[in-house]
Image 1 (cartoon, rainbow, N blue to C red):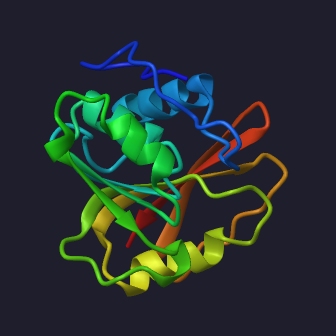
Image 2 (tube, rainbow, N blue to C red; image 1 turned 30 degrees about the vertical axis):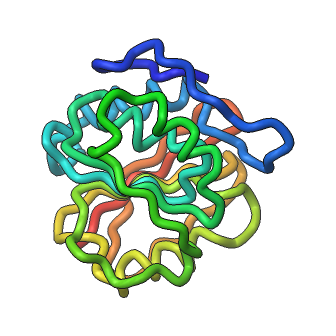
Amino acid sequence: MRVVGGRWRGLTLDSLPGKDIRPTSDRAREALFNILAHAPFVPTSLQGANVLDLFCGTGALGIEAVSRGAASAILIDQDLTAARANLKKVKEPQLFQAIQADAAKLPAAKAPVDFALLDPPYRKGLVGPALFSLVSQGWLKPGSLIVVETAADEALHPVEGLTLLDNRRYGAAMLWFLERA
């Protein structure tokens, strides 16, 4: 696994052996960031944005976002072992904050983010509670873009206050794009 674009392009990221982590594939990650850069439905630019990588696992989505111009990334997961190992590899770790938390029981946000990237374990019923927690705990500002990766055969039911903009399939993965009303 590697950073596929931006100033850290080519940086190898670790996925720790023996861990139950299924990182977003390089192909899907590259497609996601191309969509964020060029799709007409994306409400704001990634440049200078504040990003949340929820269910961060390895931290690859947050690291990729900052590599491509985001101002900062907050990485949240119940187990930050892999993410912290990968943050040691980036040259500007001060651009990241790591928070150990349950995605369904997030603490109140100190400041809302422009983008929330969610890559939960497939078929575990975690998306709905995580989206509700993002909305109820103030993590999303009006116009924030939320991207959720699920298994291609999983349905997504947005919570109140989120609007489905688009979805795209990449192999076994489906990317869902939502906007905070």
